[in-house]
Every structure is written in structure tokens, then in C-alpha cells.
Length: 408
Image (cartoon, rainbow, N blue to C red; front, side):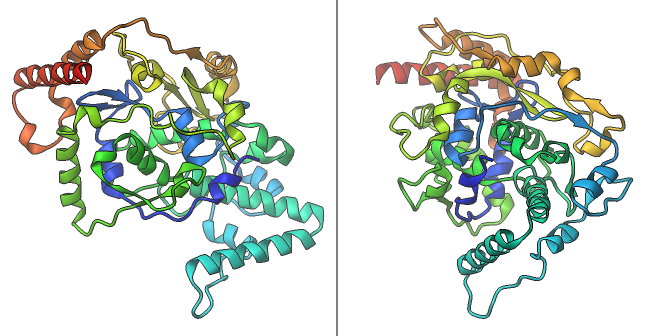
């Protein structure tokens, strides 16, 4: 089904300060991070390289319903409250025999997880086929709702359940692209939200690779794939507010030449068969789909990540497909997103549009960027000055950085 590589990724310490610092620089209109040196966007190649998830195949699109009660009872054999359409996490874990499976005395976390996996495989192998399918579907709902597409709260949503009816079709979907859309949606959350939801190692490792001078990651297992297996976060014992202030200052003054636009130039494809089919989707601006979440991957804003000069571009405006609320429960009608977002689904099926640039310098883009964002790309207190002065300061910084790069 394309999830195997994610399960090989070792546990990683959560770095909420780093996630919050990135979230504070997310421009929802452009679906991109706005730094003093320009836009940056986590891409499909980042997802494929870091997590091993499939970013190719059918769009994760289809029907959403105001109520999943009957569907959950039929496909999961579990009760779902009619108003919420959410499966209680405890009920899901109990159905899989995981809720009371505690650690033995003296057992390490790794030993405990290995034992759980071993017992689960044995139980699944001995089950009748219909029961094994039922348990697999329950596990996938738990995995998607609490791990890959997690949101705040304890219950597990059922929005992907219709796509799990035929288990033989599950592996045909581009779950990695849906995951990226979910990451974009999470970055759009309020800067005041300090909790981390979803598969947090992705954004952390993305920052380790692209912004190494922040020194938030530690390369502990070099050479492993997917790349998230190589890293752990550095321990920082300072208070979260102090960490965040430090990160904001570091990003404001980050050395332009230390930005790594192409971190995978020295990476081969050995041991990563999922990359072969994913490559046709790399380097393309395309619409991403996660059912009712339809968001653009505006890769044309980050041409430098493709080894190109960044040409001047028209900055995007807010798209009309953004859902009104952060919970799928806000949708009160049965909706076929393949029909409602037909143009965007067709765009995905065509693999979007390749990014091209004939520019010989980044200057025009950087000047337009400075005029659009001005002081808004600075987040630390010492940079809160008048906007006009900040725009001039930003333009001077960017132009100076370009000259430094040219000289190098």
C-alpha cells in the first residue's frame, strides 16, 4: 500500500519551537514559507525522499459525507456517533487488542514495539480472511487518522474510510501528495497554536536539510532511507518561548549562502524503488488533493530549488477551494470532490505543469518580493520598525546576498 517505509522511521523527539517558527512564516495565499531570502515550499520530492510515501497515482479524492455512522458500522463493525462521525480512539485500539497491551517489566520502548509487531503479525496470519481484512481496515483508519493526517483531539476521523472499502485499491492512491496538502493546512494554523499534530518528523527533517545552520537536527544514522531515518532532533532544555525567540532571530539573520536549495544532489536512488515512479511528479506545480482539502503546490515560486534562477512571477491569491473550517465535520452535505474540483483533479492527472525559467538573475523576483512582503518576513522583536524602512532594509539585504553569491 506504500506505507511500509514510514513504519521504518525511528522515533524522533518533537521540536514544537521549530514547527511554530515555520508556521509563523507560512503565507496562506501563496501556500509557501516567506523568509527574508524569498519563498520556500516543501515539495513532493521532499515527501518522497524524507518519508518514502508514494506521491504518484490517483488523487486522494472522492466523497465526503455529513455522517459516517452506517459506513463505519459496515466497514469497521464499530459504533460511530451520528453527530460527530468520529470513532473513539480507545474503541479502535481495543478492537485491535492494543489498548491494554502494556510494556513488560524491564522492556525498552523498542523491544515493546517489536513485540507488538510480532504478536500482531502472528494474530493476523491465523485469522480468517474476512476478520483479517476488518482488522487491517481498522488499523488503516487509526494510522491515517492519528498518525499521517492527525489533528488535535483524541477521536479518529472517518473521512478516508470510503477509500478503504476495497483494500486492493488503497495502494493506488497518492497518499504522499495528500499528506503534503495536510502539512500545508497545518502550517496555516494560528501562530498561537503550540501543539504539534500529524507526522511532525517531516517538517523537522525538511528544516534540517534546507536550513542546516539552525542546528536543530542531529545526523545519527547516515545513509539510511528514507532520509527521516537518519535524523533526530537536538535536545533543547530552554523554555519554549525562549527557543522560539532564538529561532526567529536566527531566521531573520540566517546567512543566505547557507540556505540549501537542492539537498538531494548527492543522493542516489539505491534502495528507494518508490522514487522511480515518483520522479515524473518532481519539479512541477500541481494541485494536491486530500478529499475536501484541495491546495496548490506553487513550485514556480521556488525555482531555485530546481537549480534555476528565480524569475519574476505573479504572486498567488487565496484560492476558492480552501475549506471553511479546520474540521471535516464542518461539511454538512454529501460532496463529490472529484466533481466539485474536477479541474484540479484533471490537473493532478496531467501531473500539473513543469517549472521553467529563462531568467539569468534573481533580481527582479527579489525586488518584487521585497515590495510585497516588506517587514512581514521578520518576526523577531528587534526588527519591528517602520514598514518603509523595513522594505528598504530587506531589498538591500537580498541584493547584497545575490552579489555575494555571484562573487562566490
